[in-house]
Length: 211
Ligand SMILES: *[C@@H]1O[C@H](CO)[C@@H](O)[C@H](O)[C@H]1NC(C)=O
Ligand SMILES: *[C@@H]1O[C@H](CO)[C@@H](O)[C@H](O)[C@H]1NC(C)=O
Ligand SMILES: *[C@@H]1O[C@H](CO)[C@@H](O)[C@H](O)[C@H]1NC(C)=O
Image 1: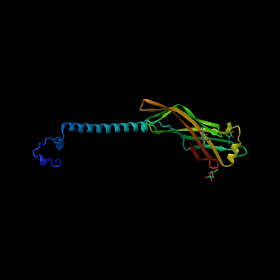
Image 2: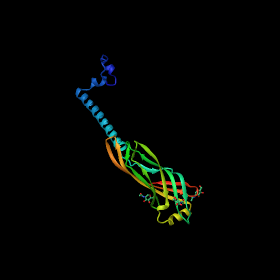
Image 3: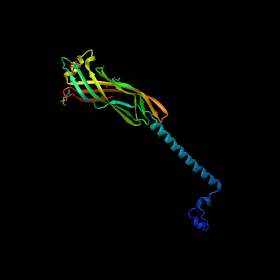
Image 4: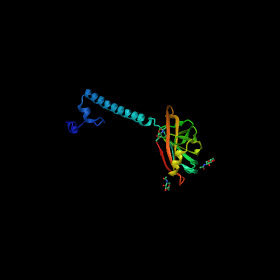
């Protein structure tokens, strides 16, 4: 009968109501079906909302540690002594990179990057207070002058220079805050720890490693 309502009720008015349900279900059953329909809608909507909140919490609001790195150094002057009188003087432009993957700016305080030889400071570069924008990399080029004058012992330098390389470290820390949605702030610090190897013969950068 429900398969062919037109034959069973040829004069049923075409007033826009769903034909078979209106005709064959009792009012209670009709109500029950509606309630089930609503329950399904509400459940689906709640699940959708929970998913939206989870994505928001896990992806958007997750506070990631910005990356603090040194890029490809551009050497300006590079003078080295030999193994008999081990020494170096150099100036270069160091591209500092602060990569912020957060959905909000990273505002950091003034800081510095220290350059070391065998763990001993041989020069430094100032990092002015600034910010890395929403999902972007702040780039700043600093000019650095380094000299072996402050090394107490040059025996390590003598043996390294005899192999034709010079290895420097660059260390630093930025302290700042990631600002989410303009209201919520989270303190974040990030460290730089890079090693740069120079080729003394060609006076060029042979390798840059950061961890
Ligand atoms: C480095 O600079 C100092 C001071 O200017 C100078 O006395 C020294 O000879 C230089 N060393 C080298 C290896 O160029
Ligand atoms: C320095 O660079 C030259 C030219 O690329 C290369 O022949 C030499 O082996 C390098 N020195 C070291 C210590 O790697
Ligand atoms: C920097 O990295 C070197 C190895 O690449 C490691 O030996 C050293 O402990 C690190 N320093 C800091 C301050 O993390």
